[in-house]
Image (tube, rainbow, N blue to C red; front, top):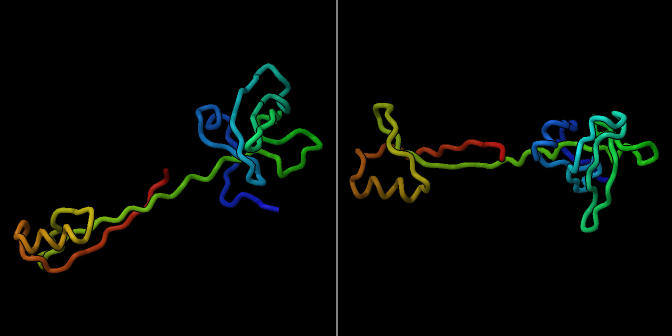
Length: 130
């Protein structure tokens, strides 16, 4: 049985704002409506499954109705990690030159004399969440 890795606990406010949700077993889910006047154990409605989703009822904490099993509970889809890489020329005096999208651009700037004499080309990497 598949259990969604890195899934966060269901957050009703985030789901209402459009953040992606799924069930604990990895099934796609789409928030439909929160009915505040309904019983808290049955106040969230979502479409679950793909390609033919069904309407299911959940508690405000994302728990599926009795009999559905814990793997049907809603969770937040983990954010996707986006990796970024840039290159910069570093000089002997500790200064960093312009940041380039490719290593080739950084090398070319040195060859064409667009920057001071290059000492080394440094790779800059970081990660963000989508």
